Image 1 (tube, one colour):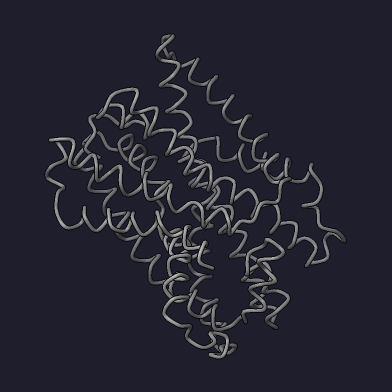
Image 2 (cartoon, helix red, strand yellow):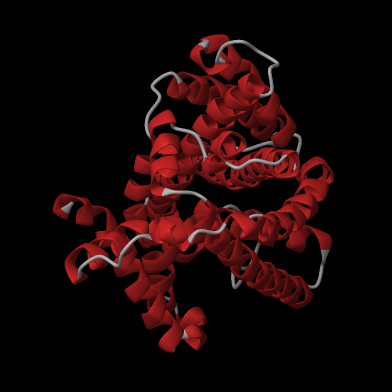
Length: 351
């Protein structure tokens, strides 16, 4: 928001620290978002196939077929690649429905609450270890770091007054974050009381979300339908939102490198965008075939988020005179939270 122009993450960092730093930190940003894209690609493929089988549309899991992942991911990427306007038209109603279902579903699960599902409080050692291990899951469920840069660019394009654009971005982020914290935490609280540890283990072993498992565990057609709708809307809107940030990261790196050898015309920029889209589809489809654990990806993503979302901004605040006005306790809090995220996956060594 403090940059002179609306540009990609890599471009803005390059404006502050130079092109080489822009590429280096842009690659880190890209890696962080790549982890998210890989996770969502697995979720989209395995969950959609699970639903098709659960509702009798298919007799087998289509996720076992290589062509299924290619078709599903191609469709989603091609929709997302059309730009922000189409995405908002497609994802906007989904987001509204998703929020409503989260609240309604959380209430609907209340009759199925069983406090024995929480089990006994563990000893201090395992409690501290598991708290660190679940920290990335807590953060990723209510934070939307990947959309901040594209969101800022979109508002800059809409409003010629930079100060007005910044004001709109801050307000939108604060409202969205407050809604997310309240609704998601209530949903998680209700859900954790409605399903047993055994059910959670089944979802983990099948590499599907617990929402996809819920149709088999909790009786009642209404809950099943809402759970299915929530899962589908959450997957699609999450994929679309993440794609904007991912495209922003990749485009920034590619343009940064190409600008060293040639003039970047509008035609070349479009060609680069198409090449990125095609490469992304092939990469994600190939990744799905490996069937890597989604939970493992989230756990190892902590250090990446620590560096990109916490430490780099803090470093820039102290490095750049134009950002010194942001100094204060918040910077140290963000840096400390980055430290917690960074060490979280290493707690696995003590399990």
